[in-house]
Amino acid sequence: MKFYITTPIYYVNARPHIGHTYTSVAADVLARFYRMLDYDVFFLTGTDEHGQKIATAAEERNISPQSLVDEMSEVYKKLWEKLEITYDRFIRTTEPKHVEVVRKIFLKLLESGNLYKGEYSGYYCIHCESYVIPENETIPLCPDCKRPVKKFTEPTYFFKLSNYKEKLEKYYSENPDFIKPDFRKNEILNFVKKGLIDLSVTRKNVKWGIESPTPEKYSIYVWVDALLNYLSGVGYLYEPETFEKYWPPDVQLIGKDIMRFHHIIWPAILMALNLPLPKTIFAHGWWNINREKISKSKGNIVSPEDIIEDYGVEPLRFFLMREVPFGLDGEYTEEAFKKRYNSDLVNDLGNLVNRTLNLVEKRFNSEIPYGSPDEKLMDMLKAAFENYKEKMSKIAFSEAIEEIWNVLGYLNKFLDEKAPWSIEDDKEAGRVLYNVLEGIRVIALLLSPFIPTTAKRIWDMLGIGKDPYIEKFSAIEKRLVPGNKIGERVILFKRRK
Ligand code: ME8
Image (tube, rainbow, N blue to C red; front, side):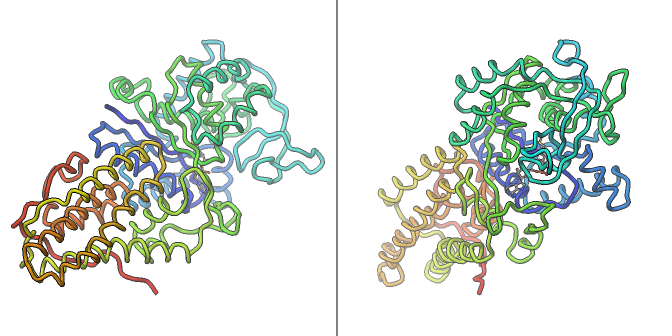
């Protein structure tokens, strides 16, 4: 079984913030989850490097667009490395391979009669890189980002988007998983219902872009260039084996800001190319500060690097996935972060691991005690695993984590109630600890897609870190072996004042 997952490719006009981190961490969690289920995963991410927005950002810094994109794509790569993002391919839209594929696709669309020459007259928002219709012509503002927009008229090539209205509507109704979450469907359906206008896919006066394979030498509209990364990134037209193995995408993660591009324009282009469509394009919500979207240009950013410096990588991954149900908007505050950190990671998880292993060290000479599985606990672990898998396959991260925390709650209570420290009989005390250790082992497995390094540290402490199969969900069936030595005990998370 294969699993092809993508993130948006991010604009390199500025440094990444926790919004970009959010989508990339989410994609990574899913990639890791499916790898643990033994799927053959292809995880694509990258950077969107053409267009006016990038050219302007370079101008403002007095450097060439090429130096800007070279520098900033490295910044993204470095951050993803730090954040343990296990992508298989990082695509840059300035790469020769991508450029070639985009030009070839443009020709295909031209030859199949999907493109025609015309004239675009209207407004354009550089921030959104989008043709827009402002509500008020006297003070024309972008209806999405509310920034001033400019009018222009220029010759162009149009893509016959209007031809795909009925086909898209049919596709949406026959494929209920295509637009996710469900509550966002109406926005797209209503938009399409009003009728689609053809899309200008070239820009005459934008120099920083892929040159169109036409006599006029325009540049290809940056959103078309960008969307095609999902094809070029997986080998379309140059690496047929890879492409055939992984196409179509199983999950494409995006923010709700770029739904129309992904749920309307993107599938229409794929239909024009006669290619199968992605199974699910999931739009998550926004991280806000004081109800306003965190955004590179608004300057209200929260830097992932700062949080990492302060708390570490895994608490950040955990917070983003735990705090807000995936799909809804969330308010970022440092207090909420600290609260989650102290209560979930330090108290519920860290303390349980620490006090259990401490008892094993002191009383059982650092050896896994003998014990038979407690039926109730084993049933609970099994049920939690099933529920967890269901939530993960529905892309409901916070709910999947809640399943883990139900088990943690149970284990903490189990340990408190059985109080092995006050049981005199070694066998009886050992049996309690054995079961808690088993619970911890399984919890580390379920946590692994979210906080992989923590999971590894737990397995090391349990003395099973070297087991080559430890990172697969099939390891759930294994059992800790009584008599084996546990590893060195470390503090997973230090309490923050
Ligand atoms: O739109 N909260 O790139 P971009 C949550 N290049 N997620 C956020 C966010 C926030 N406050 N801010 C950004 C582009 N994101 C295009 C995409 S794809 C073919 C081309 C995340 O750098 C979210 O995933 O503006 C959003 O869709 C994406 O970053 C936009 O990144």
